[in-house]
Image 1 (spheres, rainbow over the protein chains, first blue to last red):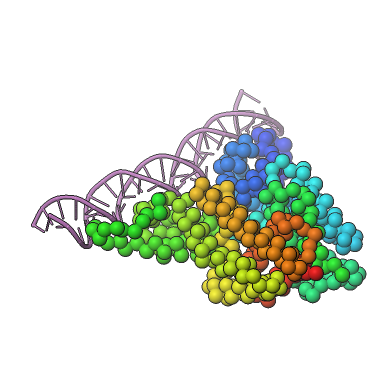
Image 2 (cartoon, protein in one colour):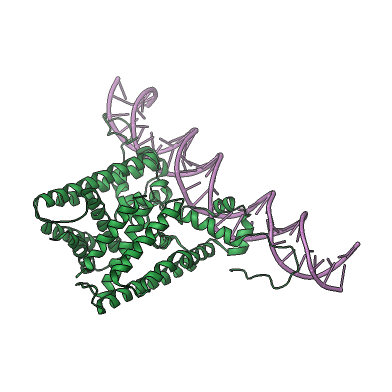
Length: 203
Length: 203
DNA sequence: CCATTTTCGTACCATGCAGTACAAAATGAA
DNA sequence: TTCATTTTGTACTGCATGGTACGAAAATGG
């Protein structure tokens, strides 16, 4: 599905606000867990009829995939940008801490990482969403691995870990930091946690 | 609820195997997530009628609490024992790695930590289970904090982190290691991860 | 004004869920 | 044998879910 925009100008004008539904669904998935919010509930919260939502996204799997893609573009992309900024290792760690703090302070409800949450319940997801999860996970791990590799080459860090294992380590530390955020730990605690976790690479 | 054993010898003899149900439910909760296994499904898998299960555990909340308590006694207790063994910091880290490896190798299905899983979906749990989650979380955090405090006093470690924050750090690292296990990472990777994560305390 | 096109939402379907009413079955006691 | 006691499972209730059939509504084109 993923309906395309109206080519002609005929017919009843569309009132359904696709982006609004995606935002409501994203917020709901992140605060209550992607598998614990029903389509019915999303319809009520976004003020759309059920057939309206189904016409737009096909089915539950389609909605989840769309929301996850939106999460990538809006929430993950800024994270990627930091790793690919070319800054020094220590600068990047501090930039990460800043990003986490600001996203924690700017969010009304405590948020974790939607990709991690969906990944944890991958078995409950449909095919489209599961494939998207796999792609995004591979994408992020690659970015972490490249970052580690470049920092090693520049002599900014040293570690016993191979690059793939170091990438997994980074992935898990960021996931943990987001768990802390969801638990509403203070930004100071989150910062201390990240600085400590990344101190294993210092030389 | 939590029915007590028959005092008299009258009446129809009981055939329901309480412990078997608990084991089946625990296995199911750990492999599929505590909120994604229905009572119906547990009844089928353990060969018990639905009223039979309800007579034994009261309701879904009662079953979850019972399973979680059993998880504590059977799975968490050995972990606690390591931290309270009085060994040196480095010995305890190695003992942890051993415990993780053996539990990973001995388990047919990939397992994470039921307490973490339930904690993550605490909002979906009933009152009894939620209370038990809180108690167990406080219990484990206390054990980690005591361990850190003792190791500091003995001069085996040094860190900028306060004891409470260090305890949170330990908690998250163990949770991450269990996530790795659930993802079926090799025991070597899990070991490397833990050694690296705990290396932040070395002096 | 009418036909065509497109989007709209009410009302429905089958399924699975947590939880229960109730009578049959199985024992010891009298 | 019969009664009291206890455990058993079949068959049900009411509700929420994912998903859809279908006709009304709202626009443009002729």
